[in-house]
Length: 296
Image 1 (tube, rainbow, N blue to C red):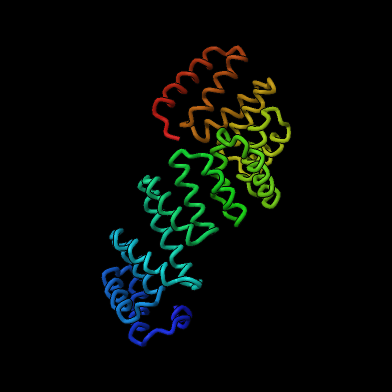
Image 2 (cartoon, rainbow, N blue to C red; image 1 turned 180 degrees about the vertical axis):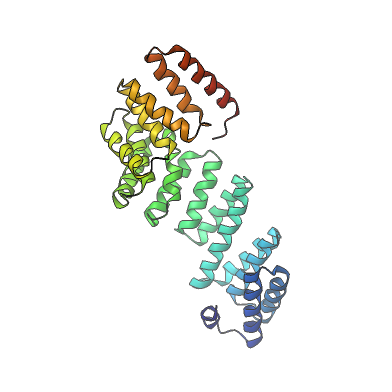
């Protein structure tokens, strides 16, 4: 906090008020923080960090109109100021996160698109934009955003997870997604999720790709409690007409998460191929029940 204060040549009164406001904000005393920041802005109206702190406080007070107005003032003053720019990026991220939790995807996307004009390439803002586009079902735009996040910072896990949900919509982007998954899996050989997602991408391109089974088995060896690893391996084995082994994996998938509809559907198909009609009927009925009430 003291380092931040030293970065600005504030009048003494504004410095004291800023310090008091930051302390109040940290302990969650928003009314006091607002009063301190408002007075600090009056004492030093050219300080973008004070304005950005006030914007964050208004946001936490759910005064969104004032929060945006104050953030715009901070943007106008923050050119070339890395500290203030970072604070504003955090403000926009927090605002967008609130909108996303309330499923206001279009409002969040509009906010983030505007914020990225001032903070181009910011990984967290781009990530949030990808989530907003996903919520809007604008999958191509979402994929572009998530791949951009991976390019900027490949250590962030969320874009890989979201991309793994959109392989059916990947289209021409599938090769790029597969390359990103491969790099992530190679860099993180002990990460079960990374192995699973690489297998899914390979299977999305070729359901008979034998390399996928290797990565699925590796994922299961690292973490045998992921329902989807067993499910994907069951699908692969069924595609190879090894229905008995497929049934074992699909049953394990159901044990781990019995509320997922698709494992029941494919287990019914495997039982059909094995001539176990009663079991197939039971699984088909469960699939229909779950499909009627399932929320992905």
